[in-house]
Length: 218
Image (tube, rainbow, N blue to C red; front, side):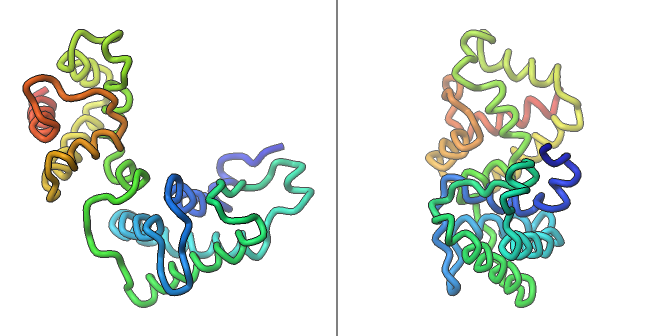
């Protein structure tokens, strides 16, 4: 019998957040240096949920000290560490290195400098509602579902709670406030799930601005 969601979150919820930050990123932390993935986790989590970092540190140490044994594997009552390229025999030591870095960050205020998102996980963690719109309404299937971009945006507005749409507007303004050039906006769109280009004659940045204006008036 696998774990119920509440038990999973109590044991592994924040560990899972840290592990997701490593998807597509090298797990190249050393005792002296944090990886890009861990920097992204810390940068975002310090800003949004600072108390979660201590819980992540606790869960990482607990998992390292008490990895799931044969019985828990058989019952399905365990968290499976995603493949990060670390050999199975080295997972425990690696988790301890991460926990030490989290502890240092808390105790010494060693926080990554603010910046634009640096990883796929960080883009989606920072702009979740933008990812919901771009990934859900602007995939390659848009040509089969809507006559144009405006129709897709209208459908989003008609089927989404106004509070979430307002959150999206705020995220777009935050995105536009970052020091990004047009290439960065294209990267942001791709990281957030957009699989088509902006409508003519807009650039990505100009379309994000127009989108914020449109949704603010709906």
